[in-house]
Picture (tube, rainbow, N blue to C red):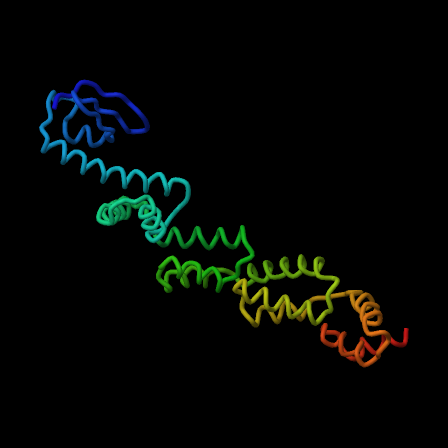
Length: 246
């Protein structure tokens, strides 16, 4: 097959026009097979070139993916699989990326944890679980997490609690504390650290007055039902009883 023309069609890509067909090939493939200085290419060589180009396509696609954001092996494999690439070529490309230093587990873990600390409310246990889900080694995760000062987590906890405090002033103290414990635990913070932070807070709410009036209206001044209703909302018996003397 005679080569008639080369036409650049993108970054590192050229359209190679033959007598009766055309191929879009990567520049490295063109150079590897000396296509710039060859006039004719036989069918067997064309097959080898096409196969080599597929390999480059997988690798270049992976490179473009990790240019946007640092990725690990599992993420890259999933991305390339979703693109429909052959498993063997995917594994070969991942090995090339590792050899070239584009996949670095420790750098990824460090960047991931720093991003979570600075850009999310996630605590250490949730961050660790996210990294374990990405199939990183637990020891490597712990090595970096344990270096982080506890004061950083305490500051994050304090900010979350203070923000929630302003939002939940319509709730009883008991409901607020239970809600915070549940939310902070789900965010991955240490139980003792949560208890310590919540023991320091000052929480003032006038919610009982509103709830008391609602209960009175609903239960038509039935004291027992009003008390039980407010107790279920987390108010203390003393708080509720005091409302009847106001």
